[in-house]
Amino acid sequence: MMIDHIVTGDGCRIAYRFDGPAGAPVLMLSSSLGTTMEMWEPQISTFAEQFRVLRYDTRGHGGSDAPPGAYSLDRLGRDVVELLDVLGIPLVHFCGLSLGGMVGQWLGARAPERIERLVLAHTSAFMGPPSAWDGRIVLIREKGMAAVAEASIERWFTAEFVKKGDACLDRVRGMLLTTNVAGYAGCCAAIRDMDLRRLGELIDLPTLVIGGDADPATPPAHSEALAGAIRGSRLLFLSAAHLGNLEQPADFARAVLSFLDSWPGEPGEAMPERSVMSDFNVETEI
Ligand SMILES: O=C(O)CC1=CCC(=O)O1
Image (cartoon, rainbow, N blue to C red; front, side, top):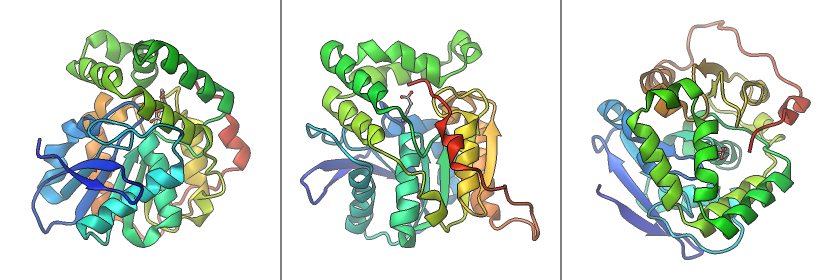
């Protein structure tokens, strides 16, 4: 992998790589908690036919530094802006999954001039209660990443998919087990302290929300509420749990590419109803 680094204003090295033709529009990919940019491997060759694909390791993960202490969604969002600044890229399509989709919401509201089209996959604007994240932080600090790896796999994939024994399961397990404890804990704190429920209505970008119809981590009601809060967004469900890009790789790629190719779609196409904020209070399995 041709991985390079930039250094952010607070001295954190962020690892990134490009695939696809120089000069093509940039599609930036942002990963979930406990994974690396490798999680996008099934989509890369397809995306790279049309796009210059830019992926990076979230602070605390993979080849990026893992500074000690709590991180924030602001910090994770600014990491993306700083990465784009250093690389001299003014505008990208942004596709983030789970934690990556939280970063995407932040960018959509706080740095919309950098984003052309936004894909928010298997994500949420609020993942309370904070005590559950504190519990997870304590657990991994005491027992290491092995204490959360298997439960994560069970939340992230349907039982049928796990039973089939797809090769991606071992790769995801490997990513989880090798994630830096301080980095994972720092990102858990960012999610614990995050409340983006009022941000959706500030997002004024072509946006596709992708949910998983069997996702216990960011359940369908969270995707519906997010799509309802972002005016004019589209909502699509995959037959998958949380890591839909791995459980349904072809459908995920098709959904993203048809959205990037087709926006704004057919004139007069129905837009989703806005949802009420209480929809976000659906309990999640964290
Ligand atoms: O860890 C989980 O199961 C759910 C999750 C929250 C943010 C993320 O990326 O994954």
